[in-house]
Length: 247
Ligand code: ADP
Ligand code: MG
Image 1 (cartoon, protein in one colour):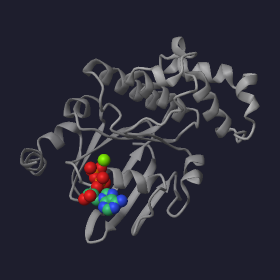
Image 2 (cartoon, helix red, strand yellow):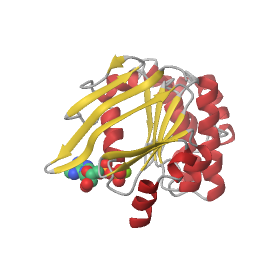
Image 3 (cartoon, protein in one colour):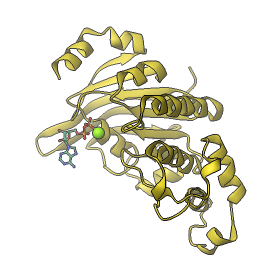
Image 4 (cartoon, protein in one colour):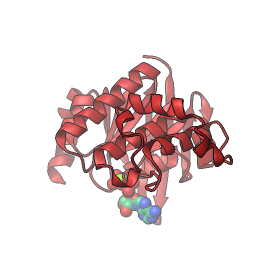
């Protein structure tokens, strides 16, 4: 396997007396899709929040391509190539699909101040190319507020890709989607990971999605990593079965 894009060692975070994340180790390689699963409250979102700098770990190391990112503000971490899609979408609803991607490109190229650029069509061709990748080119002129949920998620993916990420964090990317849309989104994520060598870490409730699309799976339970391996290995793990049957 190629060198890790993301390397996490002993990651820990408590809230009051609750050990939300407790000494977690894992790594994600370029082009790999790693699923982070576990029951509600297991610590998945807290992990994500530490990886993108929204939360500071109490202890542990996080490195991106060999460089420590602990303590860096979210904006710096994003600049270093950590993209994220959210459980609730974060597009600008009154702007068009294309404008949302153009804004992300402007920001990536540090030209966020040039608001006139939006009207002047800067990065229009680049935006359309990204929209083509996520099969949203035909809806480029629609405002995001009117889009179907699954389409909005694909726009979010294009927005994340505008930052040319090395690591993509997807928190429950297929929540609220119809089964067919779920398959399409995950196939798209897998294709992008492979073509661009992006490391993808995602959380997911739907086990069918996890087992069909993840290269590897890690399982959290009450903040602790209880299993890791291929989908088949994890599915057969008695401890994992106990957690899922018991929850
Ligand atoms: P998951 O995403 O796996 O459902 P979370 O990471 O959201 O789990 O939560 C892990 C634990 O940490 C839960 O017990 C939750 O109540 C607690 N927790 C998460 N965020 C906070 C917070 N900001 N303040 C206090 N407790 C929190
Ligand atoms: Mg969560």
